[in-house]
Length: 184
Image (cartoon, rainbow, N blue to C red; front, side):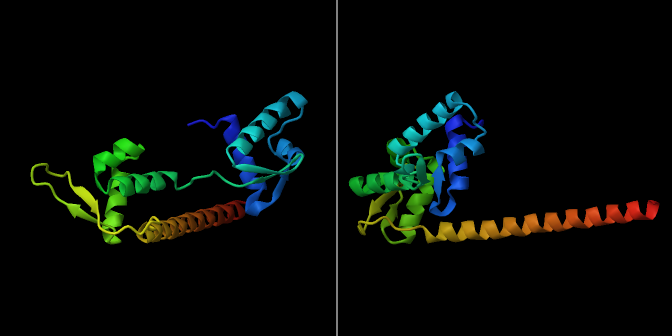
């Protein structure tokens, strides 16, 4: 997938404006390698669009703060609103009404069952098509702590793998240098 111009602007805003740091237009233009006013106009249009989407807030003329994409959990919120409204749903209902993937909808419903917010009702007529009924309404969407735990574990494993690969590469470089020194 290629990056569009707006995505490049967004990435530079994230990089420069990390931790809520202010980003001036000049700094952003340099990061995007924009020189002429014509090139900068497209950057200004993207900034205007990002302000409309509440991703960027203008602090003063020529200075912005990157806020991030709003509604990062928007899909989960949609799933939760549909489930609360209908009270009894199938995975297919959630997929059709929210646009979520089937696997994501199933995972969401399993999480609700584990949190004692819903119960699973198996339909003997339709194999693999269970209904999920709300049994308690906490109003606020339950957090998926298990998923967060799995992601942390995955990140730790990936970090170990990367560090091991870096160590192996470092060892190979050292051996290559030793060979060069011996050959001299």
